[in-house]
Image 1 (cartoon, rainbow, N blue to C red):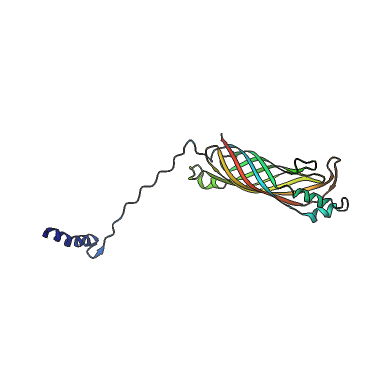
Image 2 (image 1 turned 45 degrees about the vertical axis):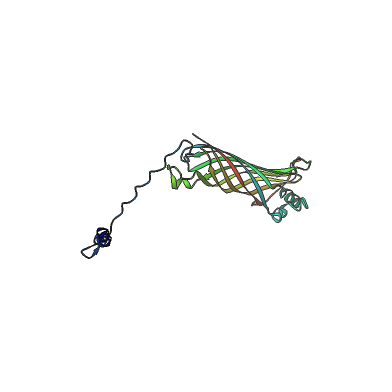
Length: 242
C-alpha cells in the first residue's frame, strides 16, 4: 500500500522532470502523418484528360428577348403589325431540345455541333417553330487544376462560344446568323454516362423578315441584333473515350 501511495506522489515529479530540462521547456516533436497515397484510377472512372467523343441530349426552358421596336423600325412600313405577330408567336415557344455531338481534345477543349429546336401549336394547322444550328468551342477550366490526376469527384464543366444559323416563324418569320454563349456542368455516374445542367444564350443577328415563308417574300433588316433566346435545362451526357 505504501509503495502504491509513493508511486502516485512521484508520478507528477517524473512528468515534470521530463517536461523541463535545465529550466527550459522541452517540446516533444510529434511524428508527421504519412502522406496519403494518390487515388488510383478505377476502370469505371472517367478519364477527363483523354480524348473522347461527346454526345448530349438537353431538354430545356426557353426565355425569349426579342426587340419588338427594333424589328418594327425596319418592317412596319412594308407589313403593318407583322412584327407584333412574329414576336407574339415566338414567345409561345417555351420548351427546347438541344442535341450535341463533338470531340474533346485531351480534356482542355471540345469542338462540337449543336442543334436546338423549339415550337408551338405543333399539333395544329397554325403550328410554328424555330431551329438553331451552331458550331461551338468549349473550354474546360478544371483540366488546368487536375490535369492527368484522378479527380476526387467525377465532375466536369465548361464555358462555350459558338456561331451559326437560325430560323423562326409561322405566318411571319425571320432567319439569319447568330452567336451563342453559355456554361454547362456534368457529374458522371460512370465512365461514359453523366447528368448535368446548362445555360445557353443565343443572340440573333437576323437580316430577313418574312411576310410569307412559302412565297419567299421578305424585308431586308438593317445590321444589328434583333434580340435573344436563352434556354436553361438539364443534360444527359455520353462520353466515349478514344
